[in-house]
Image (cartoon, helix red, strand yellow):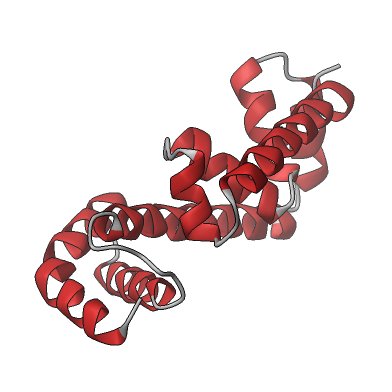
Length: 159
């Protein structure tokens, strides 16, 4: 996307994007950083004016999701009870808990494609625009990511 287009988009939607971001996280300064990061990421994409706002919202949600996962990973790594925590995952029979934990064990690229598709409900064409790959490649990556999620779920966590 051209810098001029980003500037127009920034002027028109910064306040609404910041308000949206602040509704998801409590820290005002972090919200500002996330919105600015989303606009920087948009510089790398060839977006149309029709889908640019939707993509910005998706990017913001992805940034927040990644930060939350990084915070949880840090807390787990620094926790004195991390071994107990992991063993409680393995003994849990709660489906949602098992899926969440299997998701956390996926690679960042697998998490990203699943997040775009399932959590953010984007179609393969929208994801292909964000990732700059073909829609067919998106579908294949999503299929493989779901397969790996199922394998982790079945082998390592709940059975």
